[in-house]
Image (cartoon, rainbow over all chains, first blue to last red):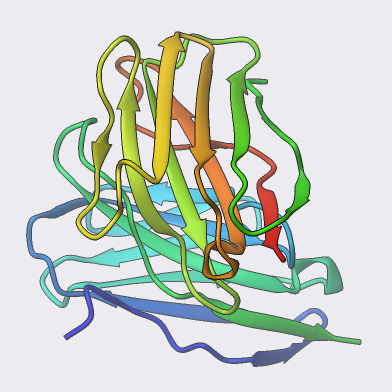
Length: 112
Length: 116
């Protein structure tokens, strides 16, 4: 079983719709969860981070974490063409020295 | 905001030569820097973690004698790919974290290495 599983996509949504990106992880010791956006040929940019079960909202983005189900998701409201990118989820165990483990990413395409 | 600058952004080198990639934190002290490698359509794979003033910790399967990491100051870490081969062609990315900060928010721009 992979440590982090993401559907590679592409996930296609029309402009203005809600995009829902999902990620499951196998390590129950995971404590911190991150979503990154990566445009083609560029390095990742941090979108959201979440530590506690439940929802965390920041602008058009909402991260949802369910530790019991080992599931984290990212919702993007009012999707824009500029949101078209690959979204990587990542997790880390407790401690700032712990490394990030990344998923392979889901490619999102927002169509006009 | 905090910025991590990585240089060069792309490099083409001949097989057998060495390439040095620099990663600088511009307005904060990076006590820890991470080096990743990303092959096409794959995720970021951590190669090594470097702490200022000490030897880097390499991930399993990463050859420390081939990928030399130096973190001599709180603002600069370098990755040298020695005796590069075509299979080393990849996108190399650094990230930096300052002491006490739990969030890995700052990535360099990445370096596209092509070995011919």
